[in-house]
Image (tube, rainbow, N blue to C red; front, side, top):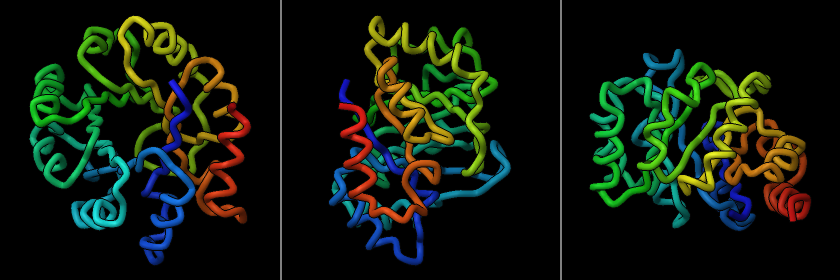
Length: 218
């Protein structure tokens, strides 16, 4: 699959949100990554319903919903109605993750699993025939600005190897630098969540950065 670049909107400047979304749209990003945190499943809060509604109104591009919350199945329909095109959930947060996937598909949405640093390939392998996207966390979930966790790379290799068999889109989320994008895209990762390591808070414009990343990975 071609390179997908998905800005992590928890890293955006919300005092200038409309302008930032317009600039990101014009830069040609592929999908907006929306972290939803409840302060329970992870020790932080992020992107509540009003944030989601606002960004949905500002762009026609696809939005995901990365549900880092307890009992995510209870909120699948809610975020679908808010305009999510793809819903990720953490399988370890759900009693019956296969039913959560079915619920997402029943709503006409893409279903994804977010694989935390402490979740093994074996723990989610049986779900792979059912899902559309896999998002491997390369930092511990909950906070931006953490270092990349190299110990997850052998696990990532297993998801890369299984991708052809199961047909999912494979992404990574956490400390995604341009160097990491170039190396891991060549190995088979499709989708990169862009935060402060590669996109936000830089002197260059979003368009310059996105264009450079795409040229580096042609």
